[in-house]
Length: 216
Image (cartoon, rainbow, N blue to C red):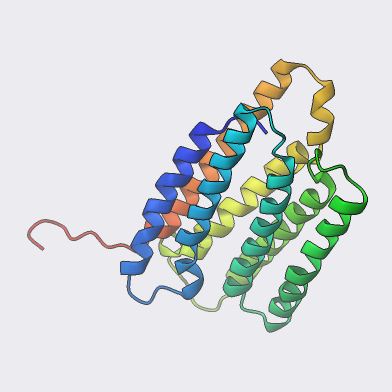
């Protein structure tokens, strides 16, 4: 993993924005879990950066954190989705996915390798459920103001990020055989995707805030 100082800054801004959720009325519980999740993510990113600077492999760290990350996003989507059947399916996936990752890491991969196959599976799962969310959204009988709907921004960010990063992370273990220029360009793309993802999260955290106009 390459250095992600910009990535950490963007996550930190998103984390600070997520703290406003505790002061907004009728905030769903799943939204209130974001500050804790983002604080843990910042800690993991800083640890990964420290390991890289000291020339210590951080694959094991990101293997397990990305697994936790996928399970967490599945939980978030399970809270957003309306269909009881799909909720049940997501609950099953939340249990099965880490089991599959465990077998992949300990019986297929070396600890110095990133779990590209199971990461790609996680990308597809999250993206597919996000697509289903939009399907449910279009089936609503009543109109809703999407720009003030946190779930819309969260699912939009997740869908775009995992659809675009799927091919990049899917071939991560092959990057050792390509030039540094290509690796650097891929790193720029990933930083852009991360910036967009957490920017959309930030909008989702703040979209329900109402700013009073002077004199109102």
